[in-house]
Length: 213
Image 1 (tube, rainbow, N blue to C red):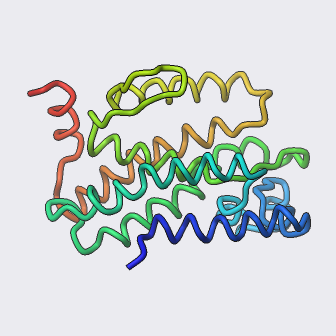
Image 2: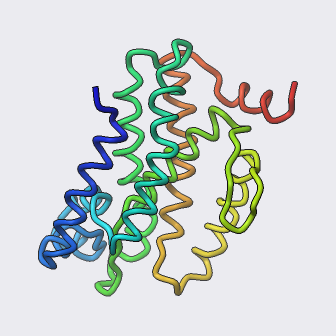
């Protein structure tokens, strides 16, 4: 059976490639806060996560999603102590809700600015990555500019710091706030769902793994 992760990647690829060759589809689906605010086009909160600016943008997000998503979906969420047979549903909820939640800060900031538009799955991908880091904090991650593996939780702190700084600085047409918001949502969603469904204390396990206690 095909995984949720691969299904998302295939669907996102098909829609993105269609939008590459059709400007109207792209314009209709991208995240446009002013249009949402003035015309109640709420579908844009979700549709924006399935289109991308170009092939490189799409490839980076989908490779990142595949690298972490399969691991999170199949090996972490499906663990008997966590979500078990509810794993796929919980994982799908993580991804879909993260697309929406990650753009909410930018919606409130730019809802009266017709010049602001955005697209891409970066917020949802960040949510998946940070969910994985929370559950497996010492997972080794290799950054392009650091040629050695670093523990996932250290990467997480670096990522959040850089995202917050770049979002405040702005000017580079990258949705850093969506990255930050998606990451935070991924952590909170995982903590809450683990507690509600499995009575599993994610933060206690995370702290024990990081401190070695």
